[in-house]
Length: 424
Image 1 (spheres, rainbow, N blue to C red):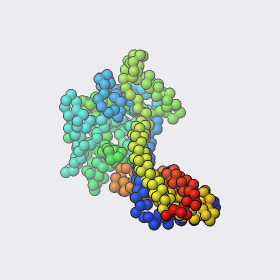
Image 2: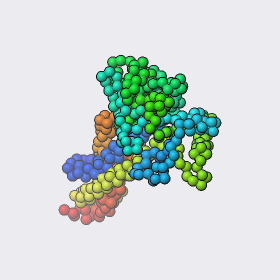
Image 3: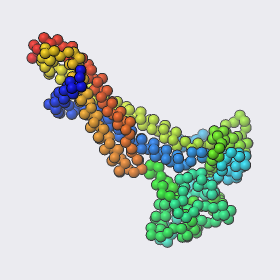
Image 4: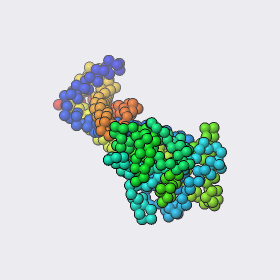
């Protein structure tokens, strides 16, 4: 069959569909739902994947974290884990001396938000004031100068970061997030101003680059960072300590990580037959966690799309069987004038494909519209269209047409022309 004949058969199929608009529209509805769900969800996940990757790169690809408790755990932790010894601020200094392959090791601490109390007491929310302006629910963190190198997300837009001099003299200086600066100083330069942080006077020495956070959650914009020594002086009740360390450029990350684990086990006197009583979190932890979440989302999307495509496919088979019955005499005439079985089969297959491709095109446009709407209405969910899944949407539509259209097409091809001509 030549391309001209294929094109002619396709036009015949489209004319047949136009002659039964309502029936054809209801038939392609399942295809539209299936393709729309695939395209829209794939666009959302594609955008979020890129966003997560950018966040991971912002943390630093060679930076690891040591914590007392496992991160991102759901449910109550076992008592053995909850009773682990707290990390110490001096552990970072010990690691730097014990593992020469480290670029740096730095400790930091954070004042918990309300609800994470000490001994049954709940701390008051962190608050920062300037004049008549006030910002509540500030995330307060005590850090060392190396912290900025450990987490590049905390990049200073103007002013400066905590210095070694600030740390050694426990100076009451603070670097604030962009959102805090905008709220407290809408028309002023924040650097050099004196604010009241939890009732204590601090000089603003810098403002971080704008970072609204991940999925609308807290980001650098909501942080206030002070020298770790000053933090320890004013908040001695905070016992949870975190350590960040970075592997030197010439060293092997996996090997250095093992050396750090051995050094921490020696420091904390962990018996050789016991498990670690601390956690070493790799920089790709966030990516791994996100991949687990998106895997479940993809499965759910696949189930929804499969149901829609199955319903659409059954509808296509049904309408094609009806079409074969309605056009029995036409099939007889075509065979009488020389049409082969393959010609009849291709004609009905192309008609089925035209039906599903129309549904696929509508689903593709709707999926693009959903992705654009999500990106516009919810900027924290940066939906990005994937050319791969757009192509897959078209291929899936065509495949559904071929699969569910083959039986009616084959049935039409095998009809006896004499019986067809007698059919009324």
